[in-house]
Image (tube, rainbow over the protein chains, first blue to last red):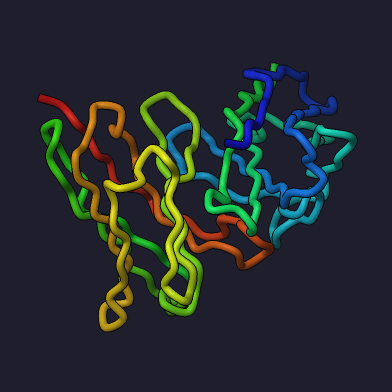
Length: 109
Length: 119
Protein backbone atom coordinates (compact mmCIF):
# COMPACT_ATOMS: atom_id res chain seq x y z
CA UNK A 1 0.00 0.00 0.00
CA UNK A 2 1.02 3.59 -0.60
CA UNK A 3 2.99 5.07 2.32
CA UNK A 4 2.73 8.74 3.21
CA UNK A 5 5.10 10.30 5.75
CA UNK A 6 4.63 13.45 7.80
CA UNK A 7 6.71 14.85 10.66
CA UNK A 8 4.91 14.38 13.98
CA UNK A 9 5.22 18.00 15.00
CA UNK A 10 6.13 21.48 13.85
CA UNK A 11 6.44 24.51 16.11
CA UNK A 12 6.45 28.13 15.05
CA UNK A 13 6.09 31.52 16.67
CA UNK A 14 3.13 33.74 15.84
CA UNK A 15 3.69 35.75 12.70
CA UNK A 16 6.26 33.34 11.35
CA UNK A 17 5.93 30.79 8.52
CA UNK A 18 5.11 27.14 9.13
CA UNK A 19 5.99 24.46 6.62
CA UNK A 20 4.53 20.99 6.95
CA UNK A 21 5.84 18.29 4.64
CA UNK A 22 4.27 15.15 3.25
CA UNK A 23 6.43 12.53 1.59
CA UNK A 24 5.38 9.82 -0.81
CA UNK A 25 6.80 8.05 -3.84
CA UNK A 26 5.88 9.80 -7.08
CA UNK A 27 3.66 12.17 -5.13
CA UNK A 28 3.31 14.35 -8.21
CA UNK A 29 1.19 11.62 -9.84
CA UNK A 30 -1.34 11.66 -7.00
CA UNK A 31 -4.08 14.08 -6.05
CA UNK A 32 -2.75 15.72 -2.88
CA UNK A 33 -5.08 17.34 -0.37
CA UNK A 34 -4.63 18.84 3.11
CA UNK A 35 -6.92 18.93 6.14
CA UNK A 36 -6.89 20.87 9.38
CA UNK A 37 -8.29 19.26 12.50
CA UNK A 38 -8.54 21.29 15.68
CA UNK A 39 -8.86 19.56 19.01
CA UNK A 40 -12.29 18.01 19.47
CA UNK A 41 -13.48 18.95 16.00
CA UNK A 42 -13.86 17.23 12.67
CA UNK A 43 -11.40 17.72 9.82
CA UNK A 44 -11.68 20.62 7.40
CA UNK A 45 -10.31 20.67 3.86
CA UNK A 46 -7.80 23.52 3.57
CA UNK A 47 -6.05 22.74 0.26
CA UNK A 48 -6.86 20.48 -2.65
CA UNK A 49 -4.87 19.43 -5.69
CA UNK A 50 -1.66 20.54 -3.94
CA UNK A 51 -2.34 24.27 -3.85
CA UNK A 52 -5.98 25.19 -4.47
CA UNK A 53 -7.95 26.69 -1.60
CA UNK A 54 -11.61 25.98 -0.92
CA UNK A 55 -13.83 28.96 -0.35
CA UNK A 56 -13.20 30.54 3.04
CA UNK A 57 -9.61 29.36 3.47
CA UNK A 58 -7.22 32.31 3.90
CA UNK A 59 -4.54 33.06 1.34
CA UNK A 60 -2.01 32.45 4.10
CA UNK A 61 -2.44 28.75 3.31
CA UNK A 62 -0.57 27.58 0.24
CA UNK A 63 0.89 24.38 -1.12
CA UNK A 64 3.57 23.04 -3.41
CA UNK A 65 5.31 19.86 -4.47
CA UNK A 66 8.93 19.09 -5.25
CA UNK A 67 10.20 15.63 -6.01
CA UNK A 68 8.50 13.19 -3.67
CA UNK A 69 7.44 15.84 -1.18
CA UNK A 70 4.35 18.02 -0.88
CA UNK A 71 4.47 21.01 1.42
CA UNK A 72 1.74 22.96 3.17
CA UNK A 73 2.91 26.48 3.95
CA UNK A 74 1.15 28.76 6.39
CA UNK A 75 2.41 32.33 6.45
CA UNK A 76 1.82 34.85 9.24
CA UNK A 77 0.84 32.03 11.58
CA UNK A 78 -1.86 32.83 14.13
CA UNK A 79 -2.76 31.14 17.39
CA UNK A 80 -5.94 29.88 15.71
CA UNK A 81 -3.89 27.87 13.23
CA UNK A 82 -2.79 25.49 15.98
CA UNK A 83 -4.14 22.11 14.91
CA UNK A 84 -3.29 18.71 13.50
CA UNK A 85 -2.70 18.82 9.75
CA UNK A 86 -3.11 15.78 7.52
CA UNK A 87 -2.09 15.29 3.94
CA UNK A 88 -4.15 12.88 1.92
CA UNK A 89 -3.54 11.20 -1.40
CA UNK A 90 -6.06 9.91 -3.88
CA UNK A 91 -5.35 7.57 -6.74
CA UNK A 92 -8.48 7.08 -8.82
CA UNK A 93 -6.91 4.11 -10.62
CA UNK A 94 -6.37 2.12 -7.44
CA UNK A 95 -8.67 -0.29 -5.61
CA UNK A 96 -7.45 1.47 -2.46
CA UNK A 97 -7.63 5.05 -3.65
CA UNK A 98 -7.46 6.91 -0.37
CA UNK A 99 -4.59 7.24 2.08
CA UNK A 100 -3.73 9.75 4.80
CA UNK A 101 -0.42 10.80 6.20
CA UNK A 102 0.04 10.29 9.92
CA UNK A 103 -0.63 13.92 10.71
CA UNK A 104 1.51 16.80 11.95
CA UNK A 105 0.73 18.74 15.12
CA UNK A 106 1.31 22.43 14.52
CA UNK A 107 2.10 24.23 17.76
CA UNK A 108 2.06 28.02 17.87
CA UNK A 109 4.54 29.05 20.51
CA UNK B 1 -26.65 23.74 2.96
CA UNK B 2 -24.89 20.38 3.12
CA UNK B 3 -25.33 18.48 6.34
CA UNK B 4 -24.22 14.97 7.32
CA UNK B 5 -25.29 13.22 10.51
CA UNK B 6 -23.82 9.88 11.52
CA UNK B 7 -25.46 7.59 14.04
CA UNK B 8 -25.44 3.99 15.16
CA UNK B 9 -22.16 3.86 17.02
CA UNK B 10 -21.82 2.41 20.48
CA UNK B 11 -20.22 -0.24 22.64
CA UNK B 12 -19.93 -3.68 21.09
CA UNK B 13 -18.11 -6.84 22.07
CA UNK B 14 -15.29 -8.26 19.97
CA UNK B 15 -16.71 -10.35 17.18
CA UNK B 16 -19.93 -8.37 17.13
CA UNK B 17 -21.37 -6.17 14.42
CA UNK B 18 -22.79 -2.68 14.00
CA UNK B 19 -24.63 -0.72 11.36
CA UNK B 20 -23.73 2.93 11.09
CA UNK B 21 -25.92 5.47 9.33
CA UNK B 22 -25.05 8.70 7.57
CA UNK B 23 -28.10 10.84 6.92
CA UNK B 24 -27.55 13.59 4.38
CA UNK B 25 -29.33 16.82 3.57
CA UNK B 26 -28.59 19.47 0.98
CA UNK B 27 -27.55 16.98 -1.69
CA UNK B 28 -28.48 13.54 -2.99
CA UNK B 29 -26.33 10.74 -1.59
CA UNK B 30 -26.77 8.45 -4.59
CA UNK B 31 -25.57 11.17 -6.99
CA UNK B 32 -22.33 11.64 -5.09
CA UNK B 33 -19.23 9.78 -4.06
CA UNK B 34 -19.35 9.03 -0.34
CA UNK B 35 -16.57 7.85 1.93
CA UNK B 36 -16.08 6.56 5.44
CA UNK B 37 -13.04 7.71 7.39
CA UNK B 38 -12.18 6.65 10.92
CA UNK B 39 -10.00 7.97 13.71
CA UNK B 40 -8.89 5.80 16.60
CA UNK B 41 -8.49 7.54 19.98
CA UNK B 42 -5.46 9.81 19.89
CA UNK B 43 -4.56 8.62 16.40
CA UNK B 44 -4.71 9.95 12.86
CA UNK B 45 -7.30 9.79 10.14
CA UNK B 46 -7.69 6.52 8.27
CA UNK B 47 -9.56 6.07 4.98
CA UNK B 48 -11.98 3.15 5.18
CA UNK B 49 -14.12 3.06 2.05
CA UNK B 50 -15.52 4.98 -0.89
CA UNK B 51 -18.80 4.37 -2.68
CA UNK B 52 -19.08 5.86 -6.13
CA UNK B 53 -22.34 7.16 -7.56
CA UNK B 54 -22.66 3.99 -9.66
CA UNK B 55 -22.74 1.99 -6.43
CA UNK B 56 -19.27 0.48 -6.74
CA UNK B 57 -17.48 0.42 -3.41
CA UNK B 58 -13.80 0.07 -2.58
CA UNK B 59 -12.50 -0.80 0.87
CA UNK B 60 -9.28 -0.55 2.82
CA UNK B 61 -7.62 -3.91 3.36
CA UNK B 62 -8.18 -3.81 7.12
CA UNK B 63 -11.97 -3.95 6.69
CA UNK B 64 -12.25 -5.90 3.45
CA UNK B 65 -14.59 -8.85 3.85
CA UNK B 66 -16.08 -7.42 7.03
CA UNK B 67 -18.04 -4.43 5.79
CA UNK B 68 -20.96 -3.71 3.50
CA UNK B 69 -21.85 -0.21 2.39
CA UNK B 70 -25.33 0.48 1.08
CA UNK B 71 -27.63 3.40 0.30
CA UNK B 72 -31.29 4.07 0.92
CA UNK B 73 -32.42 6.61 -1.64
CA UNK B 74 -35.79 7.16 0.03
CA UNK B 75 -34.01 8.23 3.22
CA UNK B 76 -31.04 9.85 1.46
CA UNK B 77 -28.87 7.82 3.81
CA UNK B 78 -25.63 5.86 3.53
CA UNK B 79 -25.17 2.76 5.66
CA UNK B 80 -21.99 1.05 6.84
CA UNK B 81 -22.34 -2.44 8.26
CA UNK B 82 -19.25 -3.91 9.90
CA UNK B 83 -18.94 -7.38 11.36
CA UNK B 84 -16.30 -9.44 13.17
CA UNK B 85 -15.37 -6.31 15.10
CA UNK B 86 -11.91 -6.20 16.62
CA UNK B 87 -10.46 -4.12 19.43
CA UNK B 88 -8.56 -2.03 16.91
CA UNK B 89 -11.78 -1.05 15.15
CA UNK B 90 -12.44 1.28 18.08
CA UNK B 91 -12.65 4.74 16.53
CA UNK B 92 -14.82 7.65 15.58
CA UNK B 93 -16.35 6.89 12.20
CA UNK B 94 -17.00 9.83 9.89
CA UNK B 95 -18.87 9.88 6.63
CA UNK B 96 -17.77 12.42 4.07
CA UNK B 97 -19.01 13.67 0.74
CA UNK B 98 -16.17 13.01 -1.61
CA UNK B 99 -14.74 14.43 -4.80
CA UNK B 100 -16.52 17.77 -5.05
CA UNK B 101 -13.48 20.07 -5.13
CA UNK B 102 -11.21 17.52 -6.84
CA UNK B 103 -10.79 13.74 -7.14
CA UNK B 104 -10.73 12.27 -3.66
CA UNK B 105 -11.32 15.40 -1.60
CA UNK B 106 -13.37 14.88 1.54
CA UNK B 107 -15.31 18.09 1.20
CA UNK B 108 -18.05 17.77 3.77
CA UNK B 109 -17.90 15.78 6.99
CA UNK B 110 -20.35 14.66 9.59
CA UNK B 111 -19.66 15.00 13.29
CA UNK B 112 -18.74 11.33 13.54
CA UNK B 113 -20.15 8.44 15.53
CA UNK B 114 -17.99 6.65 18.12
CA UNK B 115 -17.55 2.90 18.02
CA UNK B 116 -16.01 1.16 21.02
CA UNK B 117 -15.09 -2.50 20.77
CA UNK B 118 -14.53 -3.93 24.21
CA UNK B 119 -15.38 -6.97 26.29
